[in-house]
Length: 308
Image 1 (tube, rainbow, N blue to C red):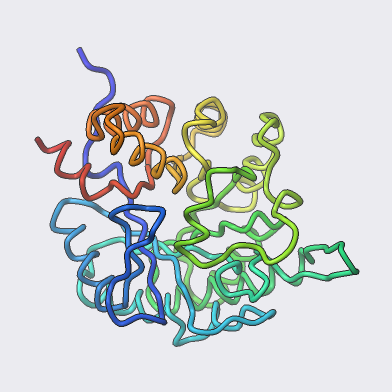
Image 2 (image 1 turned 120 degrees about the horizontal axis):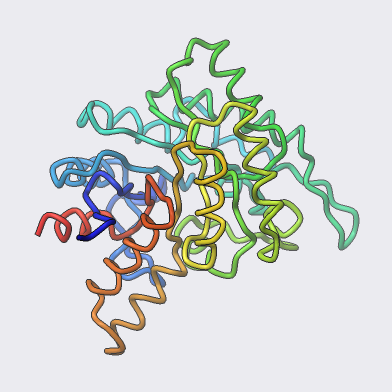
């Protein structure tokens, strides 16, 4: 009589690909998760595909950063290299790329900034122009879907238009339509080497107290051409996930983020609960709340557990 069932097809595996390493490096705050070379990323992607996963999500860590995020849209950037290598090795695996600037900006923000003493502003339109260049470069490398995670206004329409004009009309867009300014991103910033060097991201990510605003943000992205809507983080926002799925009826994704992952790992390590049982319960709750796609660092383990 079970209403909600999990399968490997529900999950997307995030991969951190670094230009600065030659062999995998474990991320201190995320046990069992690694920064990877392109070669190691290909191996992970191949394993994921063999386990029955349908997609991976790539994040890039460049060798150098600047205030123009040059490495984000370079034709031979780290993500572009990884996309080409993975699509060559596993042509049937769906490759999704994170489209943001924080990993490539020397200041760690998701857009171009203008500083005035202690104050700073993110310049929306200038940032969107760079995001468009990044998305097109990922599509040119072979990405099946691009996933803008920056929360700039108007970026979905601009990316859709540019992709279509460049002949990438079949490249889909997963929009981080609802991305909250969350305390649960801490380990990710270590993994992606992208902590802000000044200020914070509350001026362009969403206030955790706002639900109606989340629906307005999602509606804008639907209107601009998003194919899939993403809610991030996961557990504190099950109500938002449900409302987005019910309101728009579009394929809906949720990102079970690094801090949520680290909490479960820490609790299991201390013997508070069984890790496998806790993860399966969490993932079932996300699917029950409306998620068609779940991005999770447990994707490979879940592929095995759901088969069992």
